[in-house]
Length: 423
Image (cartoon, rainbow, N blue to C red; front, side, top):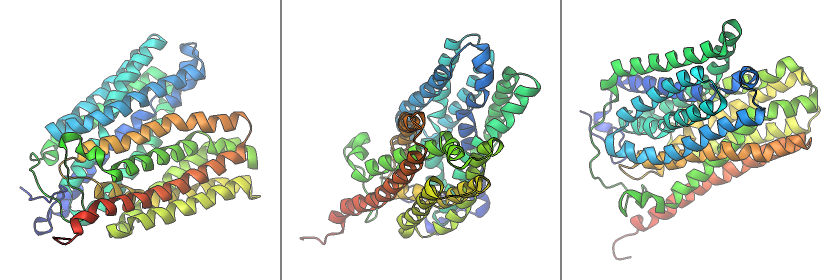
């Protein structure tokens, strides 16, 4: 059994092998892909669902709101369950619920049945970040954590890309019900792979430990971490990160089309190129994150460059054919900060509370995705297409400030521990 540090990562003297680390990273990444895949189960099928259920787009959008609100609540609560019972049973339960929900959608006969199944899907989706980061932080060697976070981010992007690529052709060839049933089969197939390799996902119970200087210690019981300012700075970071991502996914391609006469066939390509290039940026970011001390600078540079590209799209006179390339450049720049972003959270996490901290921090993603459409959707309705890109750049600038505020809050909290005795 591997000896672990206070943060749960293997100690340098007992560093796990590359094969062991790769096995854990691959399994966690596979599960994370299904989580993101399931977030887009319904959206690509809206045209079919609108007809068959006689529903408006607002009503169909409400199903997504239900999903993310439930996911947010479950994500915050599931962190405590992960810390208490371990990540493996929670992961298996989440995957099973996503598989069941896909079949539930396929069998739905009215709108309210879709809404009820959206609740089940939200519960299943809510467990993944506390589970994933507990496994990665406690089972992967510290020198490879940057690469682990890189793979984790890439598989999430691939899940988003896979959903429309798989569901729409199946809906066209057969029906939307067949497409959703196939999604359920995929979720259970991944669950089977993880079950066969379940020994690689086992963890010993956490033991009471004391952090080294500069890492916050958990005081005040199971809710003590909520008194740590750096944790809430991380929450704010992910809230604004989700707002920026939501803008790119929902509004930026259409806003660019209106500004630069982008051919209709290329509008969807903007998002695809962004996601693919973001995944490439994460690969580079995994190497850049090898030195945790420079994480904030990496995030700042990547998001700063992405903000500049957003302003170029919003204000420069560029060809419509060049817009997808600019989206790719923006995605690559933002992606380079992905692994460093996750390391920032890890460095703010007290011992034996990874699940709780990541559950609260990553709930900011769900809340940001719920708030962003209200703000930027209003800009789109009023024809403020440049305003969309100004807002995107401003949100990315706030992200940079928030990342450095996390470091400041962490250092402030660590300062008393660094004072000499009797000072």
